[in-house]
Amino acid sequence: MATQSFSARWRTEVLAGLARRSEATGTTKSRLAERYVEEGLRADEHPGIVFRSGPTGRRAALAAGPDVWEVVSTVRGTPARGDAAVAAAAEVLDIETGQVRVALRYYGAYTEEIDERIRRNAEEAEVAEAAWHREQTALA
Image 1: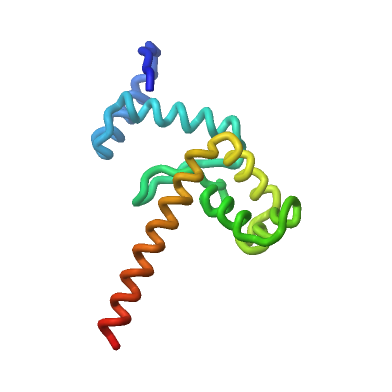
Image 2: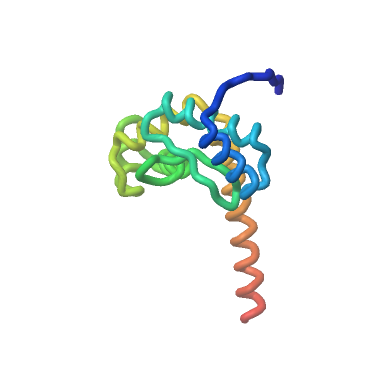
């Protein structure tokens, strides 16, 4: 990935906060600032999308709802298609159809990122299920 330098003037308070957050997370100030700018740009382009931290890293999510990958997986998992799939996913997730559409628009822009999340989640579920089966065998 190509990079370029960018010079900017920041308020002292912003830089102090960036330094504190950088130290707390063990992330360089430069990388942290880049993440904040990138996520801010994405959030501006996709109103209703926020970014959350978790054990698997940062991920796109609905501001008042599940992660984007969860919405996409739910839409794919319904036998319905088109608007019916949107309505079915909204019902399953207990969110509005508009929120499903927000997640799908984000998915359209960042398909590879969300597909990778879905793939990793499926792998983790398989590992957890295998562990559960081993535990059940030990208890038998």
